[in-house]
Length: 328
Image (cartoon, rainbow, N blue to C red; front, side, top):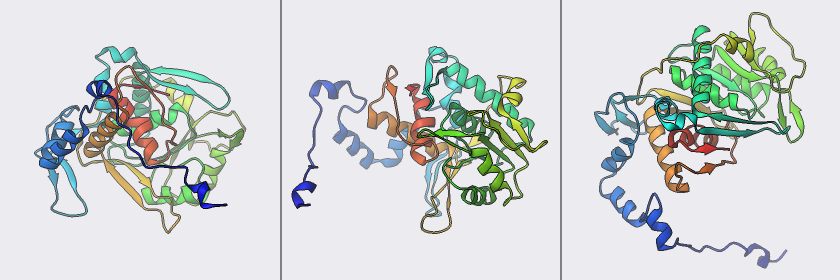
């Protein structure tokens, strides 16, 4: 192979037309950048003002204990206030939030109002199982809307979620459960991946033989395959949701309260749990998605990431909902 085969990528800037730039969310990038450099704290405070806060922050940034920086100190909010709650009194309640197409060919559409009702129901399920603010819930599921519902329900009640990628082994799952000390785990019976069924519940059962923390397991029936069952511990999603109420209060969180823990892959050592907080995370993810993709209310948007990674958390689940767009 010659060097010529590698020279297929060029570094070249392509600027939008003036007409396109005038209608863009950022009409002048250089001016926006200059504004941010002049006063970074005022810049990010202005971005935060576009979101719902129960109490405004006292200071934008606390740098007193690096590298543990704290954003929007003294502020109170919950990312679900911005991802779901604020849409319920607007026309977005009936707007499609999610268009889902599964690997077997099944298709579902879910409006912002319907998504909110399902999140409230699952929040009530978790609360009924004793999950409270500050408790970590492990989520080990396939790529289904119920994964998003579980994440949002955890956030709504102030319980940090720990989503584990559905392709990880039983030992990798057990390690993350033990580190997070989760008492509740949410999973599926199985999941489809490239034409094959992945036995998620089987992996969960094996992982729990290596952990003493989990007391309750909620299982979403996706593939319908036979699975082992532990009475008193295991619960079908559809059963617990059948009697749950579609209304639930959103827990008010300090801006620096934990939203979720996401573990590194562990390829270079023990997996490290990275903690993201409600306040700063909601500001930067909603801002970056809006700016990078120039998303408007009428847009339909698709992110190719997996929900089990940070890109999926940010740009499949939370940011699109905060912007009120339709995701595929």
